[in-house]
Length: 108
Image 1 (tube, one colour):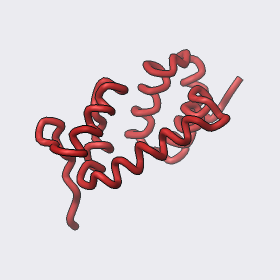
Image 2 (image 1 turned 180 degrees about the vertical axis):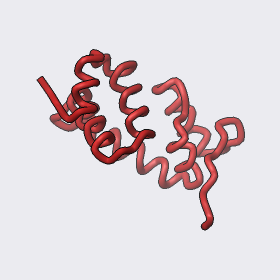
Image 3 (image 1 turned 180 degrees about the horizontal axis):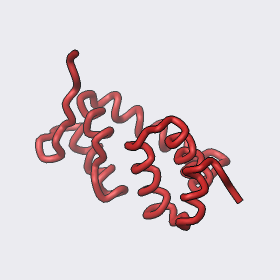
């Protein structure tokens, strides 16, 4: 089976490099999922635009990350669990007890 390779941040060019720079500035790194989407600037840009649009919704960042973490654990996705744990803790500043509850599908 053919697989896509993640694009290295140092080898990205053009629009993909610009998008990677934006992700780097926001997250402090470019996650593998984004680097893999970097095989198509249109896919990566579309994904980032969708996330931006959803961020303007009524759930808010805290509840959105807690739901994403609950879903990641229900799906057994370690990658998503790690990503949403990081975002929840470092970027949204969710306390460790709330993150632990979300991993178990619980909430106060």
